[in-house]
Length: 366
Image (cartoon, rainbow, N blue to C red; front, side, top):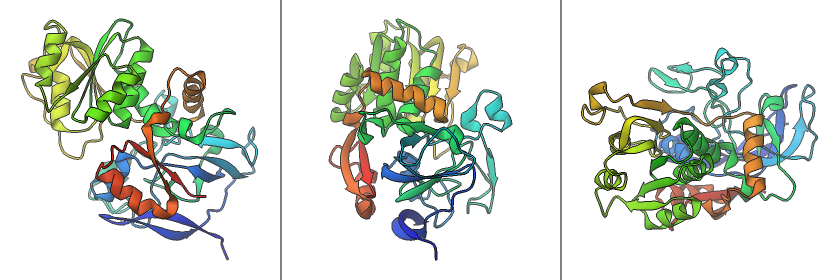
């Protein structure tokens, strides 16, 4: 009889609950990771609400920190008992997209209706944990294509220091990278949730010298200043588009980053751009977007709109771990709460309703 583990599973819209599941068998290219810390993502809230469809009974979560429990026979260069992370996106690097330089799009791009209970098709790209396969909010997770995806955690770093690397840090930094930021640039970043805060830190690392952040939460704006923001605007207190245009002398910013996924933040991100500027879109949108004629300069503004999915793979994780180990960025303060896996439903309630100034929660299975 298979050994069992606890796992947080999607059961129906509004219901993610702890259930018992068999501990996965390990194939030759896999690794079984014993989770020491994981977390809840905004995407998991979309799943909880039924806004992003997944299969009933799927274990959710996609941000693993843990220890190798068992290695597949074909996986070399690692050892059991080693502390590791794996990216939220876990490519195998065999797809056309991955070999064309876009490993985040590795794997099946579209899943047909019926495979996941959704209507029509949905984009999946290389996102497998908690989407196409069982995820990380469990005592154990099976890491596919482990040779390509496991990254050792440097000695001396805590789980909390590296917890942002698998998704939030990788996504936020990609938002800054996709914004084509150059030394001396001005950047506006809309929304300072965990991803937006990482985009702020990434913009500073890339050389932006005027970083303007927008949010409606004064606590998050304070944290953003610590991440490198030069100007913090509360959209409840001013017309942020008007204020940003004033701050840039009417020129507009060199780049904007949208980190929420709403029509209003997307349109504002477009309206503050200079001619020839870049809008980097990170938000997960749950409704159709429309592009205003005036915001888009009727298509004559030489604007660029780049979208991104969190880059994965062990090389991406190695680079992010290097940044954390160097001390150039400290994302530990983003972990504001801690829960046992047994209390995952309470953790979801807190995070989904954004109480008590929550940013990220550390979930500890063991």
